[in-house]
Length: 296
Image (cartoon, rainbow, N blue to C red; front, side, top):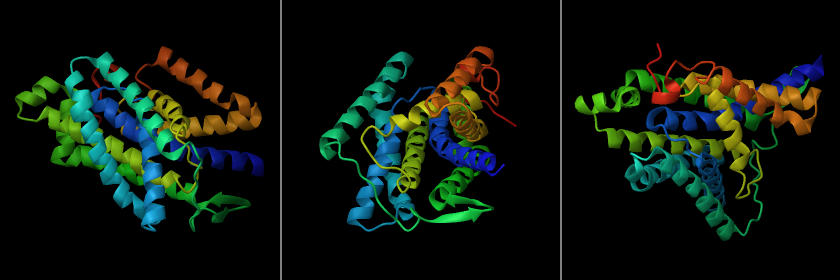
């Protein structure tokens, strides 16, 4: 019984990590309708930026988020403005452009770091707390709490602030939003910047947990895509809950089947959901075509 509880707990904590990465990816897709293959590399940049801040400025990674978020936010806006916006009427070219960004960022970091693995030890890195007979990593609990705060805050902002309402309006109907006086291009820039910033926050939160390499983004982007499809295209809560579903699936499959098959299991679920319900479990009809709909 204790082992089963341990697997469930590990799955929930792993799901929190996946949700953290997937929310920004889902926001970008829901509004701009671009499948951002470079989202994992944005997480990687956030992790390296956190290491630099920790090494040079002696900033704890959790304080480093205050620096990493605006850096990735500005970088994301620049990517949207100068790379994706000129391809606005060429959706396939935008997808290829994000894949090009993936390769560019990965190889630039590889050239700068020489591919050397990096890890940092913070007070939270080795701390654990007791949950019954189980010991739980404090860093993973912090990531779980953080993604919950992000999901609640993002949902609140989308439904109550003027900028959030503009984002939802653009996602529903770009032409109508433009006729209502909304600056669509500015909204796209802000959305992509915010999605990149969330990836940076995810990187800062994950730095005490993982050893960094230039290829580490690939560990997050594939599960994030599965989370987005499973939870619901364009749904914040779908990305949040979908992360836990994928995390639990991976943990249970790895424990009861074979660790080598854990990713194969959730990829099978990923394909099944695409075939049976393309909108995802919490998406709305048409979201896969027009992006984020108003969800009451």
